[in-house]
Image 1 (tube, rainbow, N blue to C red):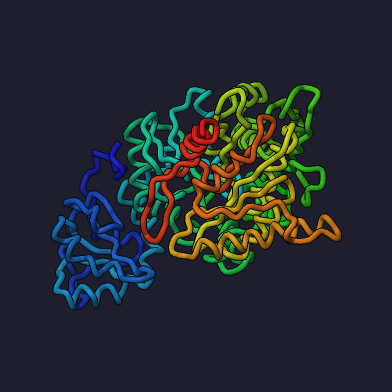
Image 2 (cartoon, rainbow, N blue to C red):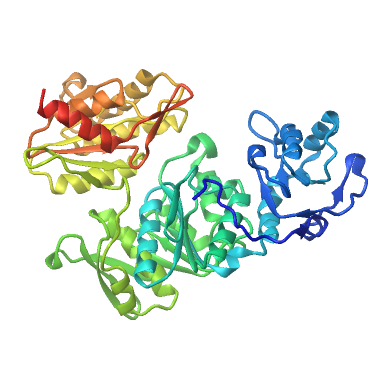
Amino acid sequence: MSSTLRPTKVPQVSVRRLAREVGAELTLAGGLPSPDVGACGIVLDSRRVTVGDIYAGLPGEHVHGASFAGQAAASGAVAVLTDPEGQALMDAAGVELPRIVVPSPRDLLGALSALMYDRPADALTLVGVTGTNGKTTTAYIVDSALRAMGRRTGLIGTIETRVGERSVSSVRTTPESCDLHALFALMREEDVDSCVMEVSSHALELHRVDGAVFDVAIFTNMSQDHLDFHGSMETYFKAKASLFTPERARLGVVCVDDAWGARLAREASIPVVTVATRADAVGDAHWTLVPEPERGVDAFSLVGPDETFHLKGALPGDYNQSNTAFVAVALSSTGLSRTQVETALADGARVPGRMEPVDLGAEAPSVYVDFAHTPEAVRATLATLKKNTRGRLIAVIGAGGHRDSSKRPLMGGAAMEYADLVVVTDDNPRDEDPAVIREAIAVGARACWVENRPGAAEDSAPIRNVAERAEGIAEALRCAGPQDVVAVLGRGHEKKQEIMGEFVPFDDRVAVESAWSEVAHP
């Protein structure tokens, strides 16, 4: 499948009609009325323009997209969506394409794209998942359950974009709105009937899901992350909460374990079904998760107003019981019976890079690769592994450069809370100094060590600060015995590491296998 996912059968649409349906006009330079033109797509990247496209020349962080309108015209663009600054850039460059000029073109891109493809989202059962942690796993569980029921599904998220059985790696968690509606149109064209997608806070803030209404929206949880983008937890919450409005969803499934979820349940302007997965849940719940260890590892019941489901976590860990519970409630809320829900979830799900074991053989330590990259996710993942560790638990952890730096010491503290040894190493440092990032994590780990051991010296903390991720993983394996568990955290499914502007091939799973071959056979 091409990385540009677009339908092959799109009739030409009047650009003048599109403009007028969103309250704008199609004009030429100087604001003169333009003759109508026909279009068959909308794109945001001038390098991907094909004949018949509308090019969206939007203001960017470093350069205005309208600066590339000439390139778009040369590739066959028939019109440009832009703002007054973009129009001035086009006029100065002598680009004479018809244009739709509005003050905030990004705000209209989703609606225009939906109209361009004749509202393809309406033909799909659409399930959206948002939350700081658990989006990917929950989306995969929904997808697996729908496929078990015989549905033909699409999946959009951090790991992959899938249409039926065809898949490409995702560029971002939630595509830009013009790409999203093109993708919905392709799904409709290929007889997909249901689509599950992760909906990031960035996507909500940047209007990437505008023009689509989700049948069910799931809120998993909220804790500190992305403050480099949102600035505050309040702004972060409001971005998440905007999914639970009539413009974006018909029904919400909200976890009320934390105060953010309880607040969302109170303030949402759509019908909401609430779920509590912890005994100390903050909010009132329609459904409550009750562990049932007597039925087996990860078994639980989900007690609702009128019935009880007997289920098992789709993947290991208490937090995956929670993710499975959200999916069960979502399926039930769409009218499925208890038997249908239990059957659909019976086989669990496999999610790349989420609590994924790496088998190194009988005499090797147990190794798991996981995407945990927030303090809460680190804590939840290590707490799960700690329960099943006969020897020591060793955590390999890093943090991304030019991302929320305030969470780095918190992640180190979360790792030290459960691990017997913390190996601090690099993880997508980008163009930050990796040593500075590592030290920020180590500061938090040392603080946790001292706090929990009165009188202990900071330098007695079991921490290894190891430059370069491959060497960090190798160090953890050198320290591990057959009874130990090594958790390699932060990157999960990712296959490239960003260092000084370059994307270098690096897969934690491959790195573990390579390091073990050297450790086991020096």
